Length: 261
Image (cartoon, rainbow, N blue to C red; front, side):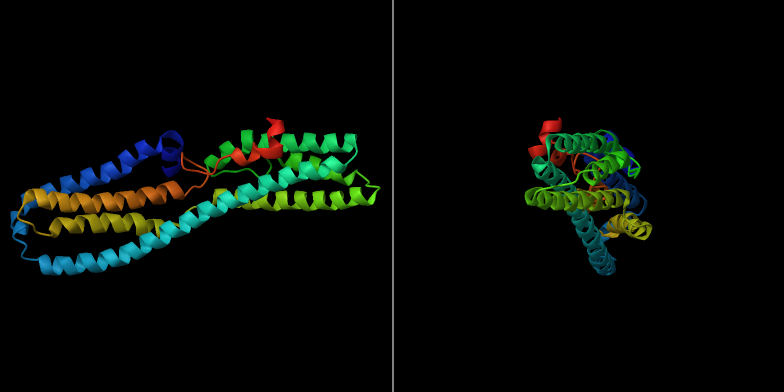
């Protein structure tokens, strides 16, 4: 459901669905609760409800903060991994400039094919959290073959050859890390705590008695909106490669890699 929303709706539309939906349900629930139990407006149980709301809010706030910070860190890690992979690939094109023309052109052709395979084929799969490791595997093998069949002669060629090998090894390592991150999502237990906590916390606000119906709805709506925006962050950040707010492919299209586009 989350992936469908991220891949088929804009962030604005998702905000309207999640935040607007939660606020609308909360206001409707508050109105129905107070119609059925008008005595709640007297605030007779406010002391008890206030203590429960405060305690529950503190615990739920800690859980939400932990989840959001974890997901934000995951998003930053994904951005770093993609930048490192693209940077190593770009550096490989620079190092191969020291090779003879035939070997250099072979390396460049393999780099260009790899970049296109990652962007055009693997990235759409990553948006669905199903990155196939076999995608671009052939292009990686072509890169290794291009380097393995080249025999550097001069000291300069040998130095750049060693750098090119290191660059390629870094590309492979970051590629694996990128696909690992693309498969990750919030564990089921944390999802249950986050979404289940909202289902419990918002209805608790219905029990807090305020004589003014307008102030009561403002109170419930404000709490619901805060919960809604928190859940929106969880949905958007849980999948770093899906949605409008996601890690893009720009790193594979700029600098030395721009020649392949």
